[in-house]
Image 1 (spheres, rainbow, N blue to C red):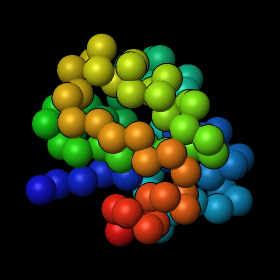
Image 2: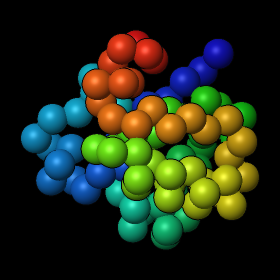
Image 3: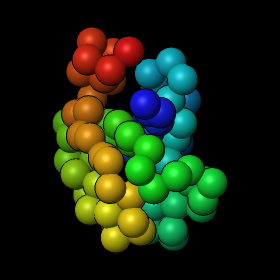
Length: 85
């Protein structure tokens, strides 16, 4: 199964530290249509994370509106590292 890990924090937070292999997609970029995901199949497993899971929840709702159907809230980088890598 294809899996994409997405850090939904702001770019400055991502630059400080992030899950290895994750891409950064800020809340604004998601609201603007998540252009960075345009070539990603809608059924790809997307594991989203932030600091507390709050921005991830917001992002899940917005990505579902764009047709993505296999989205997981990874909560934060520690959960993602232990459960999805």
